Length: 130
Image 1 (spheres, one colour):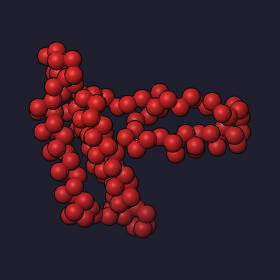
Image 2 (cartoon, one colour):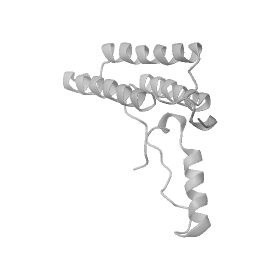
Image 3 (cartoon, one colour):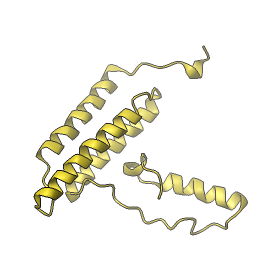
């Protein structure tokens, strides 16, 4: 089996960090109160928190690269802190104009796309651009 295809096991400390974050998200969802104070908003936001956590953790379950795993942990921690600070569980918008600096062809377009990817905040790494 080629080296790049081998599955590297997660270290116990990394596994512990990931499970701790997962539990923390579920504890946050259990006591979450919407900023509006409306019960239906609270229920909707709780469901969003739980669904988003399940989806992202399941999506990243097969990651084996320690750098990618640490990047996902950083993203999760950032999203938790931002959500708690602003009392809003939804991802914060980024205000980068789409292809605002590049021409529509060739190297400039690829360079602009690369720069936009690098400029994406850590808390939005798992979300596709709209």
